[in-house]
Image 1 (cartoon, rainbow, N blue to C red):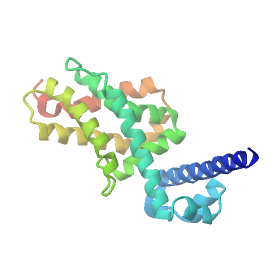
Image 2 (tube, rainbow, N blue to C red):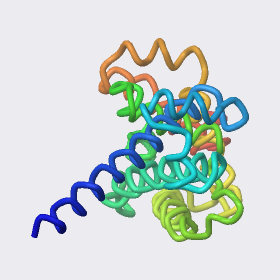
Image 3 (cartoon, rainbow, N blue to C red):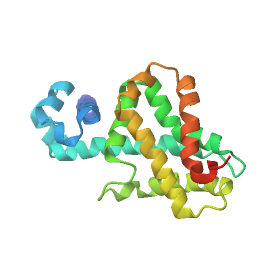
Length: 212
């Protein structure tokens, strides 16, 4: 009984160390990208020793990959959750609000939420090579977006809609990294949404707004 309890405590301590290393890596990746992160910086921030990285992840690259994958998965889950309730009768404004919601909430919340979005912004919206585990979520997010866009823009072919979706995502990624993101972070989520949603909706409409 005592031995089992000690084993559980060691396992919990190990998981805390692993989580702390991943969180520290994510915060530094959000600031500088993978090329600007060192092993010593991560372990100092996490309060762990260098050997812990090898024990839990195998290498610095594997730790960074794990943190990036975690960020991407959180982002995709949040976006799918926002898009899922939309139906064929949803408007482009509603679509834009749902599509931008993870970024809006991250900008308003700051901290770990914003670190996740900045990491996602640095690696882009396409799944990194070798991370096929996330392909299903990327495809689901794209399908959810296309379902609403096709209903609102029936004269636009699918490849064009995918291009516009990527442009909208690129716009949101830029906000996470550009100085304007700091200005938006001083606003509430509602204020950010009021400013941002019309812009994202315009990206989805494309040339449909010309001549109106």
